[in-house]
Length: 506
Image (cartoon, rainbow, N blue to C red; front, top):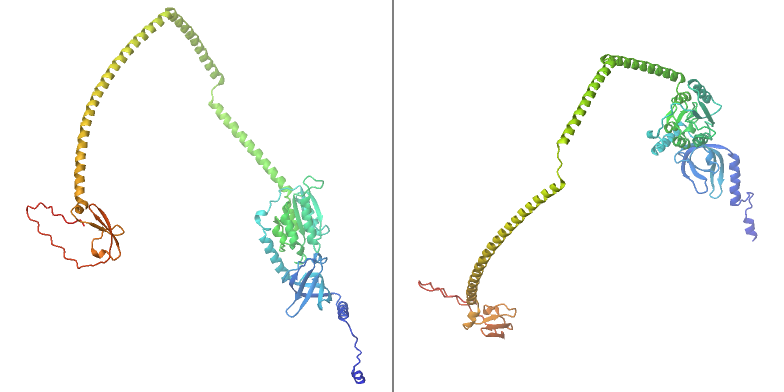
């Protein structure tokens, strides 16, 4: 025991638990690096349901974990995406649960103009694919708007240039919606201003603008970045009021320029697009008035000349009326004379006319009707007699044909009977029954087929033998086959033979 105690080494190094050591390291790191800026490429971003964002910052040699809390993400100004090169500002700390150190991100900046341009191009392609930049969605600007809405900073030179240019060209009422045009809040305020102008009622206490101008002065790509944000582009594309974008100088291009209905190179040019020049309009109206008066005077002169020419071709109206009046008087006298003559002629004809008694007319019609009835009766009697004679002659001919038909029918029946008897006798002479009557027999097998030779029967077969007076059944007990003799040659037919030698039917 004493030797074991002497071998125990006493150390002055303090002893820590794992938790104590982890929290000690956490305090040291947070005190040593309270605020740092780290440049790297975002990798493996994740967004769990908690609303926080976890990602990794890496370069070609090392990797560090990064965390953006839920409340910080809206203030970052940049959407956390895979492959984006950024400068993250925040503080270093450790995560005791896995012994890792990480950066708590409070601000994100794009690392360099190249990264900004890449992000800008990727966003442009994405929004163009959704159809936000289609030309068929562009609206025409009103020729002379009553109210102009301007979304810009109220303290810059841009609003003064717009107001001055509008007052010089054609004074109109201008409504200004003050917004920030640079910084983290700029994108949200510009989008809210565009949507707010569109929500104004047409007949409300605050007049709704007929055209909108979103304007800002020149600056770097980072200064103008608020007008490349997706929320601003979508608000411009969704605006029901025609919108003019005037962001930056002529060489500056932002995404709102693609979504707007018209792009102006400068805010002053936007004011010139919004309203025409009043003096030019007055001069144009005066010119149109002069041309209208000149055209009207020329038309009146041409009409007067044409009327004068036509008047020279016409005669004196009084003379034309007097001639027509004279013709009317002559025609009236002739009409009066013609009427009197017609009345006299009709009266003379009426005096000479004799009226016939109605009874005499009726009697004459009755006599005519009676004579026509007699003629019709005679014609009907003659037709009846002729028809009866025709029918009698036809009946006689029919009886004669009937007698001939009976005679010919009997002759045909007798002739047919004789032919049937002759054919029956001929069929009987050809039948094999006549052969059976001469002492022959017909042998059939069990299937009813004739057996023509001994070779066709085998021992044990059942046979049927038919004679002239009946049939017998037999069974073959022994089949003996002999060599068939050659068939006898047919003797030459002698002259004078009757030819009645008939071969066996079997």
